Image 1: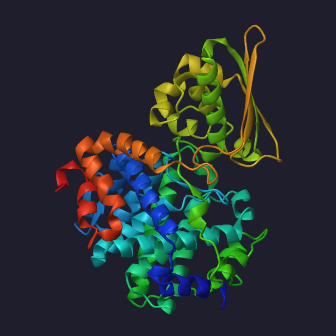
Image 2: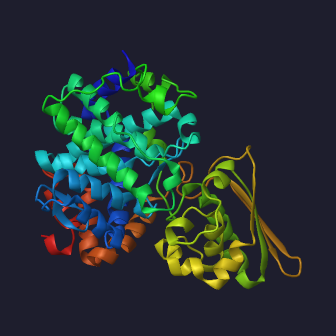
Image 3: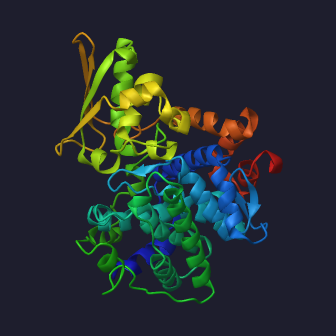
Length: 449
């Protein structure tokens, strides 16, 4: 079976009971995380601009997180944008794909349109996320190294697969949907540090949903979108690709890539998380006075300098500055949205400390690993080694840690009582006959029941 056809068959033919409980639990965790970060982001002024850009009347087809209701495509677009805006969403560690931001919005919109059960919703997301991760693995690292933003370019495949499953498409229709989604792939890394980066996720979510709906109506797309002579692999990853991750879906013992996914403790690029862990550890253990630090020295994975080496001018840019991440970790002991405001970027102490961060790439390190030394005035040094950053698959956030993150972020928008009700609804989603009770809560306070 050719790769596109295999993905299509996997998407629609995999029985829900074949999805391991651990994967379904991971799916719930990603939904809880997406709802939290999207609710927190829902008051950002850029969301108003995105909604206004659509131009059409709002519609009443699907729920927009923290914003009421809208048309199906609009809901997918905005929810994908919200899920990725703060860079607080999950990461598939082998590829740096953010699978949830494109896949969950398409899944939620399709489920609402069909009145799907919570169990069907979870199964569709797990399948869609797996498709996205497998396509990402097939082009990693060549695709990312060329400058493509893998969440934007690959996310549409997962969004289309999940929606196709919920809409009841055949394998042939799903192959067409994957083709339509793949030809809409977009997103380059030059957009990092701007609103356009989050738009990549929104576009992928909306494109995947649109592709599935068009295929359901008889629309055709290239059914060899991956392997074709001028397909995704040839055009988006000409330096190399590997079909093995997709071929592996034919083996019943194949592991699920969602289990290699991690939730973020910090609202910034994931490759700086070990650096933040290390600085916070040293800060707290030795009661470090930031004014006494003359140097923050780190040995880091090379991607830290490739992706996050800049002197930021805005909060969004600071999310991709390892210097800013280290400085705020030292001063605040945190890396939440408050650490990435424009005002925090301009803070004199933070600015001074950013200049004292010195990172050296070390190709022998894992992406979630770092060695850090703090040098103090007078010659004292403190050092530590982080083997696996918090949130990485080898050191995952616990359900308790996730619940606290959710309470903080969702509570900002909904209030503590409604946020707690939403969390309970998400944990018990597999028992829900429809997703409307969940959706009524995450739409925002005005629409809650």
